[in-house]
Length: 368
Image 1 (spheres, rainbow, N blue to C red):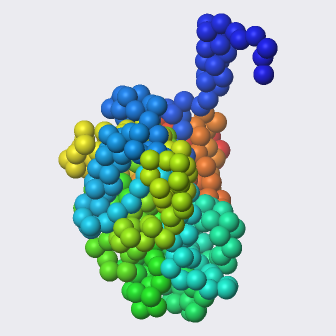
Image 2: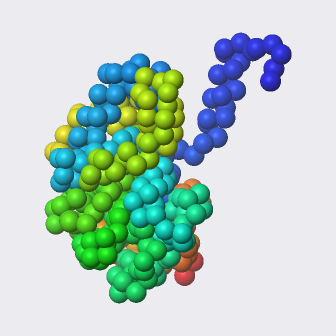
Image 3: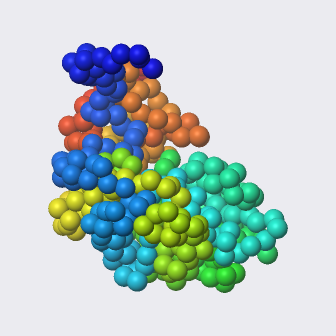
């Protein structure tokens, strides 16, 4: 640490130089995060110093969190559902599996999940001492329910499926998986970190929420398609009482018990998340999602016109393609199967898609 502080001008000159090294969102086609909406930034700044870890000191911020939970309870077809704001899908998945382990105690607990599950599940299982049983995907990269059924045993405390997989943008067969979970009395968590703010605004989207009997909990990340500031996640549970299985004593705070994973929790991004949902409303969110899906369809059509075929047909705005050469200026990623992966987030406009396709066409024509 410096013995003497430096001037503000020098400090921010240094910080701006570092920030300018970051890649601009205009060229990023691989991220599930996006530029925050202006109302999210304004709300974030308003609630910058708030701490939801001690809600008695910030009752208004706590009310904002409760309203956000209510919004998702309604959106996910169960007004009686409960939940709380997390730092994102990783924390939400950890907490869901904690609940599953508490509900079904056993000496050798295991959790069954698809091979496409987010890598946060590995962290959760490591921390919780859970055996992780991975179900291989079918040809459409969805969880194979026949294989899943054969993996369930007396030590299975939870099942996890994904609504909008990170790599391929597909939705696991949630109703069939939920039926198996119900049949065996197993806690069933749906990781909808990405799809949770896409699927409700699509016509004829795959079912994934609490309208399906057997779905126990759902995670969703407003800092993804919800365009909130980072970090903003929400864990929703059908039965709010199950959260209290995670309670620990907090004798010196304004609440005497707490079920959250983090202690100190900023209310800023929570306010940002609510601000976007209430500002845009259902009609506004439908317009955003529709635009992203139209860009995804255009991207797939354009790539296939060049002979670069899709790996699978996605349910949400994630497109994957057979390996090909990518122009240097664009940032894309690759799946574990080496498929090209592109996410058409709100910052990826039609102009970006057309410019990318033009570059791809020139590169492939040159290559051939």
